[in-house]
Image (cartoon, rainbow, N blue to C red; front, side):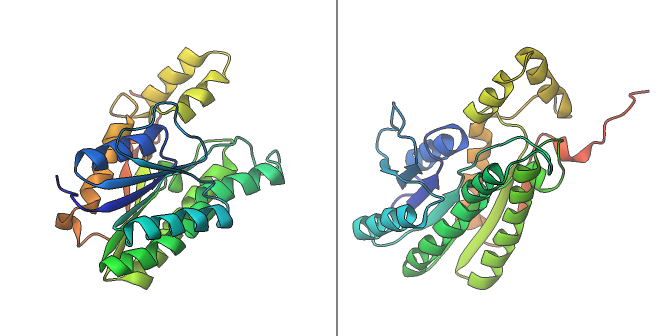
Length: 249
């Protein structure tokens, strides 16, 4: 029960990494507030769900007002909500560009803005921003996603500097993770099985990750044993960001 009496907010909490984080914190004794625009058909027992569009200021304000009224403080924020849109700088529409930035970056700003004062009431806190290996490297055809996730690193550093020493802020940067978002993207291909195998092959470790592996890292970073870690971007990518490919000969 590492997080007994702790209050945690997780965004994009109904699926994938967000759901895994919610389960982990609940299992370790925390009170978990799940924020998502989609209410899970099978909600995680024991959690507190608030329907919230985290890219919308009014929706975020309403959610955090409710959190303050109910709990009076906040210990951890996991900024996890994210979406993917495909396109280059010439093919991406302004609408898609704005949508990706609103969900993947603006939401983190808005939630941190509301969460940090509640952490200050608690005397300390941790903000985890879920970035991506594509904060460092990029695939083709994902200009909005890569740019937004790269900007998350700047936001992370700024929060870490501005609110130290009471508040720590860390970016967690996953590689390819087996989430509904990934499966939906793969399903758009004419050969989903080939695309999935390609995802495996891109990682030197020989597979893609699972949401529970990311949640374990996030939980660890929130522990008191990690109080000397802040402002960093930590990759958990199966080696995806360290290889340039090429011949095996």
